[in-house]
Image 1: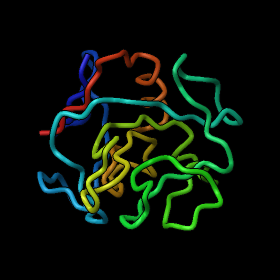
Image 2 (image 1 turned 180 degrees about the horizontal axis):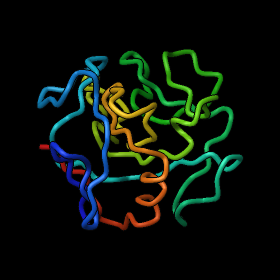
Image 3 (image 1 turned 90 degrees about the horizontal axis):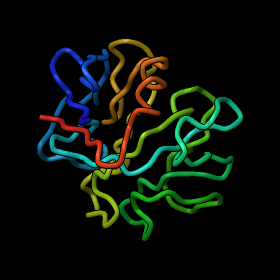
Image 4 (image 1 turned 180 degrees about the vertical axis):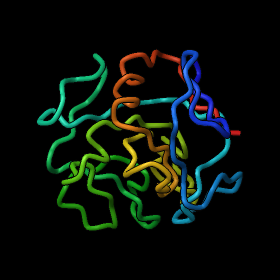
Length: 161
């Protein structure tokens, strides 16, 4: 039931899906802003989706609303947590104009007790296009992400070696 990042893609339930990773490659020493995808065994702890663009992909998926943000500011007391607008610290908007975050699978990277500067928000989300790197997340083709999402179960992990 684990997702395993391999040189040929993301392997899950006997299938291998092409994917993109961070512009900084893979790292065992992830830092905020380095663009790297962290190595390790990461739990999948949540799923967010745009209810105005798609049906709920799983019973436990949480809708993204216009005020929903993710803090990426190491000086923010809510660093690496979902926050709401207005928010005075640096953050990422979750309800984007483009489709990248229409469906987001949350990992437990540096969460829930974040170490400041160790990096925030490693998501599994839709890619921009094949081969285009992320900021550290795992990017998948839209149809592949939508196939994977409802098949995730309690205990599914993302393994990045």
